Amino acid sequence: MIDGWKEFILADPGFYVGWFGLALGMLFGYVVYQTNYCAMGSISDIVNFEDYRRFRSWLLGAAVALLGAWGVQYLDAVDLSQSLYLTTNFNWLANVVGGLLFGIGMVFSGGCVSKNLVRAGAGDLRSLLVLVVIGVFAYMTIGGIFGLLRVNIFGPFVIDLTDYGMDSQSLGSLLSAVAGTSLPQTSLVATALLALAVLYYCLKDKDFRTSPIHLVAGMVIGICVIAGWFLTGLANDEFSDVAVAVGSLTFVRPTGDTLDYLMRYTALGAPTFGIVTLLGTAMGGFVAAITTGRFHLIGFADVEDAKRNMFGAALMGIGGVLGLGCTVGQALTGFSTLAMGSIITFAFIVIGGFIGIHLLNRILMNEA
Amino acid sequence: MTAHLVDAKGLNCPLPILKAKKALKDVPSGEILEILSTDPGSVADFAAFCRQTGNDLVESSSEGEVYRFLIKNNG
Image 1 (tube, rainbow over the protein chains, first blue to last red):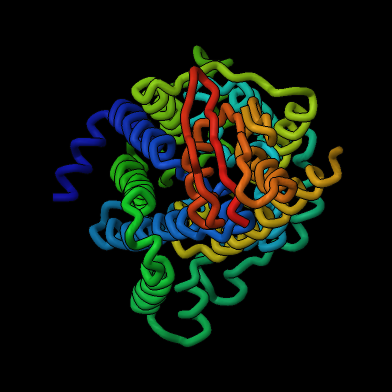
Image 2: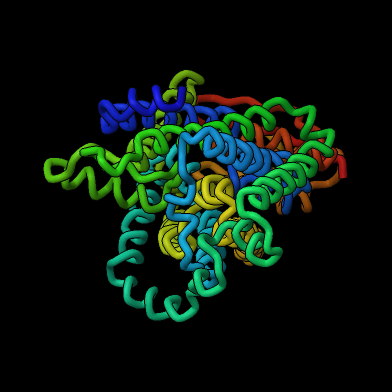
């Protein structure tokens, strides 16, 4: 059955990845808007009034994505080892610093990249500018003015995992190398145990269990990540005319890619999965806002508001490149591959979020 | 018109919540705090805030792009 689907997609991978990716992004954006799903907001809820439901919703999405990614790989629809998350170059310091910067930045910009995409679709012109700044700073960090600095600072800390007998940076590969057990079985056990632990943490809470909106948000977003793996896995073929990278939802680099694409459209081919899902997410926010009568054009409240948002956007652009992703790209998509770098970035985005909320609160308390 | 007002129009999450939380400290028990916001997410945010803190969300309404919340301080 998988072979049939692969044949179908490979008949015109640019077309199918483009349109299915757009639809997937729209579903994601629509659900984010309608359920108020927000990684930064989930940390704010914990700090400000000890409500863990949105945080559990985020974790539920991660657990669903983890189980689903294993499932689509088991079905041979995708080879996760082809993804950028499982490289043998383990840049742990960049994961730590990138996660922290991103986590702080998303607080100052009122949400992470996906939240700003949805908000921009709903008419928030601040978010539109935040996205432009994220894209520019991401590209500046990849190969622009910060590129050499990034390589010089973080390059020396890269660990080549092949020196330790590992063929990827997956948790399964690490445990397999340490315990001397077979990789497939160890990966399965690690996936099952981690997913069960996260699911137990989520579902043990009655408030979360009895809140359909949080349950639906986590599950649908996790399924969106699985669908991304499935689609790009089917479309990835070394003999195809259109090169489709194996991946799923992620938003930092695609923000820069989208700006580049919009500016150099005639020189480029079909849009990538990252670009179409990013545009779809904003469109999903637009549809949700229009259908609920909440579409309004909004600008910055004042200069302080503009400064906060630009500062946060710059941090997210830099941090997202260093940490190789965002609250979706690393915390859901990367996490679903069991990549150690993704797990580290995820943890430090959360820590950065807590620091950011406290910093913002302190600034507020010092105001007259 | 209430005596205690937080104007969070034009501000994104988490600022409306942070400002309301700060203002509630100066609102005597039993009195009402009025919050104005333009962030659509604040509707769910203030519902959750009141649910968790034990304060009453007396009113949650909207007029155009402005959301209005009346919170009775039960602290």
